[in-house]
Length: 270
Length: 283
Image 1 (cartoon, rainbow over the protein chains, first blue to last red):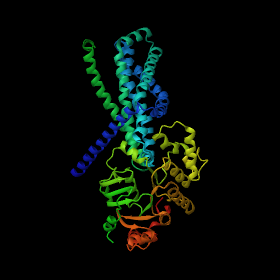
Image 2: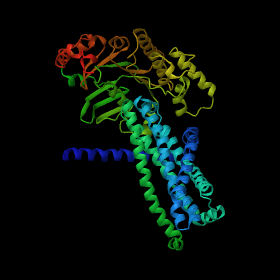
Image 3: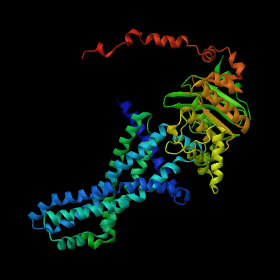
């Protein structure tokens, strides 16, 4: 029992080391690829697959987040006679937390699974070895374009999710609950800073990078056979999901401290 | 015959590829055990042995697709197994590798597959010239006109020939063939054998073939090496192998099942007990 636990612990440490090395090489190679013009077409095609085709699903996610928040929060605020503050509550929740996190989770499912399945199939059919055998670094050819596309487009997709979340929340507030739109928007503008929007968008870089690296790593290391590829996809999604939540927590703590450093008075009042 | 004795005798100093005391383990499994060999430039070396004996793992070491657990791999006298991926890129462009299943990129056409190594390693300015190269490479394997086909629409033999055209796209000095005739009918197999000889003759390349097809081995080999349980047990020309005294070599080249294999069949049950049908179970 203890021996088995020890073996598993050692194996987990080795795997963590392999993942760390893969992540480091991916980041360094991607940084180098930014200056290599022959990488641009690869990045461009990945941006189309990862970004453009994800817009509808991300917008739907954002809209439902905003609408659901409006329905859930109205009764509590109306009970205190604060229903006109509904906009502040919805919009700050959407732009700072729920928009980025749920958009990233949606991307982890849509993009992460597809990346792992594609690279996993290439791995088990020796196509990745074929890339290497022809003198091409598979990290540069396969991982860097996907990493860069996720890194650059996740923040943009989060803006779409935020936008639709704000619109969805406002529509439910106006049409279903009859809240005065002027007061709704005025109080929202007062309560939601540029900083709040920025924190949510910046999270997108971290979420996008994490989804790409975890998904590519799982694809590169997946076991043989259809079951191996399927299992790698599941592990990629679970790993991405947990990473998104952990990064969200870490970034929330960091952003809070940064806010206190840059705007000490505001943070005291807020 | 002592396996190690034959192994040490097989090291020809000054070969284009040299493997020194190579050991490879995957976890607890020992796949290659202290193997040493040298591949002579301009010749065809065939590595034979039963499935799972480490043949593919051995040639993957030649271009460092797999790193050794112990020992060294040298190309033209320079140690390569300890190089980083970026340094290895230059070495790998001097090899062509035909994978067992072809490993063609299924999202690309035949032409795009062949252009891939050219595009990745050179700055292409004249695409007409590249088109001519693709045409010439495909003509060499008898598939000119298949440029716009996708690999999924090709037969097994055609896929291997396209993979071969891609392997020779960069005019390599060494071509490594991993089971080039496996899964092909005898005529398609012979076409591949003829191609191997043609490329050796016309391009003057060094050839290493991994196979368990003895007909193919006798046809193309200048030298045959036999691996068994991760060790070299025989090394010489076709006649040397035909007359080799080692019983495992004779058993393999003649395709006779051994007593050990028969014993496994006897131990694992009778044919009668494997005749269950659904009606034998309760509905």
